[in-house]
Amino acid sequence: MTGGPVPGPRLAPVDAARRMKNIIEISGVRHAYKTKSGPLPVLDGLDISVPEGEFCAVVGPSGCGKSTLTRLVAGLMKPDAGEVWLDGQKVTSPRKTVGMAFQNPVLLEWRSILDNVILPLEIVAPSMPRRDRIARAEALLEMVGLAGFEAKRPSELSGGMRQRASLCRAIVHKPDVLIMDEPFGALDNFTREDLWQTMRDLRAKEPFTAVLITHDLRESVFLGDQVVVLSGRPARTQHILSVDLPQDRTIDVLYTQKAAAMLHVLRDQIKIAQGRNPEAA
Amino acid sequence: METLRKIAVPVLAIAAFLAVWETLVRINGWPDYVMASPSDLPAAYARFWELFLIGAWQTLWRTVAGLALAVVFGLLLGMIMGFSRIMRDALYPLLVGFNAIPKATLVPVLALLFIGQHDFNTVMMAFLISFFPIAVSVGIGLSTLEPEYRDILRSLGASRFTIFRKIALPKTLPEFFGALKVSVTLAFIGTNLVEIVSPHGRGLGALFLSGQTNSNYPLMFAVLIALAVLGIALYYAVVALERTFAGWAERQAT
Image (cartoon, rainbow over all chains, first blue to last red; front, side, top):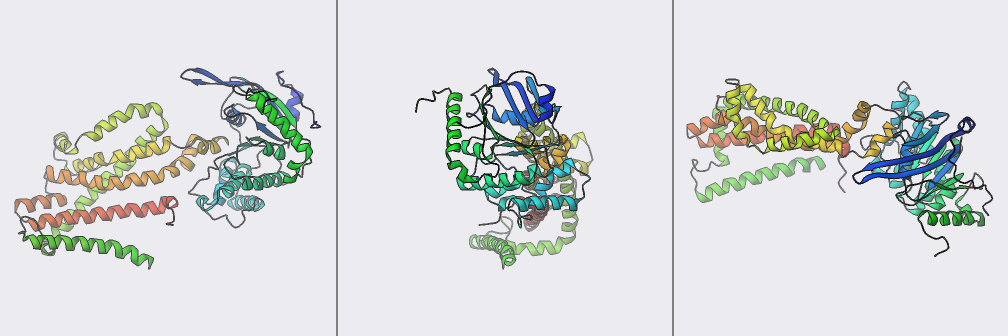
């Protein structure tokens, strides 16, 4: 129906060949938070593989542990069990080759847009001359349509523009992996579709492997090379959908038979994840 | 036009205040030992200008010294409480309890602890009375930092100190300056408390006392106005600092 292979969940340990091929390799990850009323398991058997340069969209019901997944990949926390590998190395702590963007653009109000974008370079490349940093940031800002706004404060920009700047900051240091936690979630529909296209254009110019957490199935199909559906909490990999659409997609692609069929599959999977019968309503 | 308005409005407000004061005294026919009027003050300033200058300087430097101590100690305490939950739980009741003690009761305690150390005692009191708002607001500012702010740098392997310097500290500056404005006026109260309650012949407080002993009521009121002027000056010095270091937090009026 969708044309792509749909592999089932995998719980085998990560073999060397897989690690070499995939930039991101998450295998059998389990994690529970300690709460007053005992451990709260959020992840239970998570498997995700993302080959170099691919874009992986992750969807799932609310509160199923998607944000925990971003923190694990970023090395901000360690899983109770299972392994996270980035570029052939096991993740045990934060690394400079990762970029992050959140639903809240978290720009620093006391810095100009340009200096906000430069921030990661100050940490990752302290010896880089300021002139080169500025050139790099300006090039990115131009790419996302923010040329001319370099000197503005974040408060002077609209929500969509702030999120564009936040994306620039996430990739300014040329990370291998870009992790996004619902970056377009707080935007209106039209702005969101604009930013999808910005994201698509950025990918064409900047090589990175991406994980995008989202609630928006259309977003996952438009941007993703694969869509991973997580089950309800505790989350495991419930379904993997290969998005068999051309790379240079336009929004129109979402109105084709092929995309409609994929969206249908995802919708059914989300219902299953929510514990509902896909046949009902 | 904008700057003119900014200066003219407060000056007019002060003039109106003095006019109302003067009118009240005249209408009621109060003699100056009940309530001095603004027109009595120039004579007092002209007669004792030298004492005013000396006293104002003594009050000012001891207030600023106490305030500087409060900034250093308040920042440190705020950082400790902002970063450690345990320290926050441990220190809050102590701090609130200490702050609830009327500081006037501490004047004799200090005077006995450090007999004769008048400058030290005065600076101490200015410090003790003014560090609390700074510690609390810095502590709250740091502990309420959204985790995403930390994560954008932590995910790159930045150290705790780098995160503090680049994000937590600048983000807390508006709260810090808000507290400093409160602390400035508190520090003045602390200085004058010692100058008046534990007389040692220094500062504007001593001049106030001598006005009282000599039944020179215009002098007493003149001291109060001089204190107000010092307070305003120091307050606007803080505002100027705030504009320089945390001007980004100010929104354009709409």
